[in-house]
Image 1 (cartoon, rainbow, N blue to C red):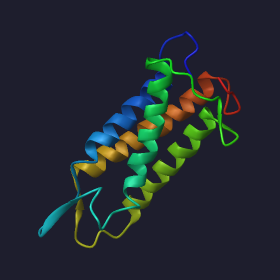
Image 2: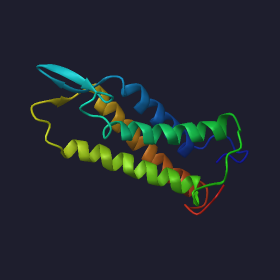
Image 3: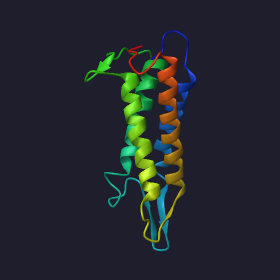
Image 4: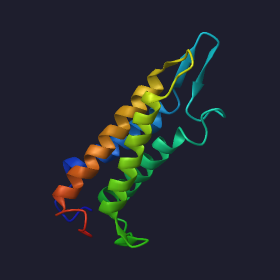
Length: 141
């Protein structure tokens, strides 16, 4: 991703989005009169944590490239990293919207949920920014 120009706004959005989602995944996802649940709770696993996992993968990859300058392959399973970020960011955002539409059964969203949604949105927007910063989703840079 980085090509000697420093960290771009899109890369920064992805890294911050992933960090925010990961941190807030340890706060209450749902709250109810009878208790609360975190994203890693049995009743929410494995669907709810996918949002966090996707944006954390995105953030880790960008951090490795931009901060440590570790060389990673230009393509993963035939996809460029920009394409991988667009795919992961899209599915994280769709998953967050799906949770908003889901019947909560008397529960309300906790601060953890809103932090995860914010992180997913930031990573998704960051993936689009990186796409335009690097010359489109086909760009392997």
